[in-house]
Length: 130
Length: 415
Image 1 (spheres, each protein chain N blue to C red):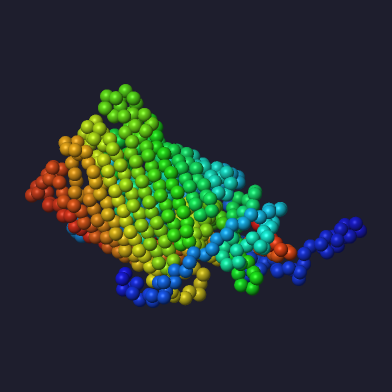
Image 2: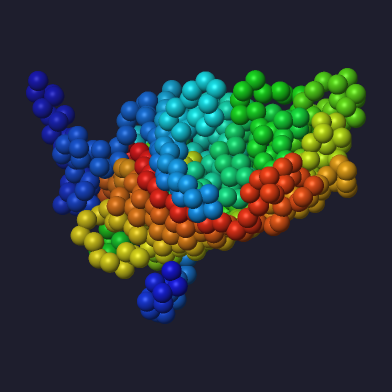
């Protein structure tokens, strides 16, 4: 164990980057379309979007090329709401974890988080919910 | 017909064209083509869900020079969503494969069985047989999510793993903070036994006496890659009626002859590294009264703590597939004493064998997140045996050995 740790470069060990910044934003839900002001979105990290009438929060991350990744924070195991936890999402019901792209990193969930279709209209990001 | 055509033309001109905006399906995986695609995209529209986990293990006891192999458990989850607000969840477990009348070992039990009401996405209530949020393993006990073939010893015998009772609880989430509070039936001091902590005092939904009640609460906070939690439990343990309690010189009532538990833990993971620290303390101030009433040897205080460090040796490897295997090397040190403080003699006798140190080191290989193959060595050291507690001393029986080691090999799954 100690030998294995010794093989890891010090720079890798010390690359415990500062926790990703997290922002929350309110949005307006209109007929399965979630309208989020672009100005409310976190330019550097994750934004948790919620609106009245929604059963689950939506995680929105700005990506390269002015694109976005939007995922419903619903655990694919038993539909429990997920928590944003550093660089991943965590379910407190049975311990499932999903990475920043929604892929499963810890079970018992086996299905990845759903990526939601989105578009930009004016100054708003519009996310299409199922 | 003409009006319909005109209406369609007008409608067509008002829809935003893809040329005007970023395309709706901006992510290549968003286009759903087949049912298999929908499954991989995470759409689960079924209202009734079957899930489960299980494990099997081999253990070699080097002092006894014996090996044993067992199907530790096979567990089935069944959940059903009635509507947006109401759902049902259950967990049925079979331990050691078979339950046979008169033979020890096997067990069939409901580990959870409750109704859940979602007030909104961040607040919900449960009612029924549920597992209170105490410790790390109590709730999250599936084999793919902890290192070691055996569950952490502290979270087996100090905080009993999968400790469940009948009651009502609330769970709330406020940004990074998760809060929880619950009320449930209390423990039963008449069934607690020396050397087993509070395990034998649990009812677990089986004709649970409800004269004694208990409350629990927890607070958990996510800060980056860290998660911190504190939890507490306080409950009565006298489950007989007032007349019986009086004759036994025990304090009755909902919170009579109380037992208290406090716990704190921290978990962290980043770049393939993971760490856990947990500590717990149980206080049973009226243990002397219970010992006098029932001729037991229960302690006034017990504690346990552990610290674990792990590293995924495959973390730096490049993988072409999206599902990454893991090979976690880990080490864990656990310390506990099930009788840190005892009533004065003759109402209490210290048992050094309940003061234990466990050092576990090994590997967990997960080819996919829901399958695990594990192997580890556990080194055990205890305090000395108390001659006053030995009915058949050496040479009539083998001399007690405070040191032992075990080889464990196991497999586990969840789905």
